[in-house]
Image 1 (cartoon, one colour):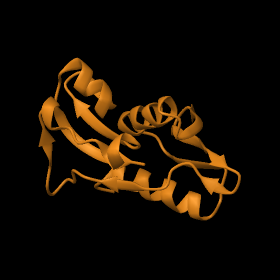
Image 2: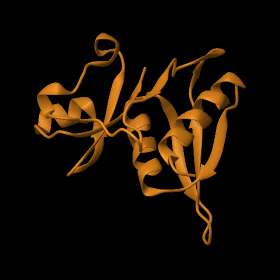
Image 3: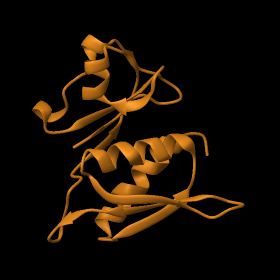
Image 4: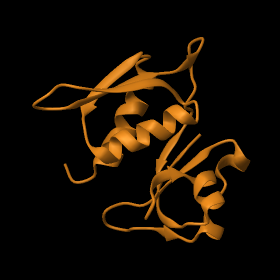
Length: 128
């Protein structure tokens, strides 16, 4: 697997289409920090890390009735074409209704946090 972030986004998208309440995937620190941002922004119910020798990341998805809270996910920077932005160039997703996820020198954070801390970085994905 070369792009674990795309794998995470695809698994979330597929789980929502299948109306699953939770999904389990291989753990990485990057995936865990993205899950933490999704939880903080209200896109998922919870996440947890399970297993001792081979860690797994378990994500509980959030729904409003039968409708998924996450309506779209888009990978911006990929391994073949990295996209870096300054703090002033971080785009607002869907007119402020979505969230940009940015990997900065201060860790992975949402676009709003990066703007407030005045740090730029690699623009990983958009969630709305």
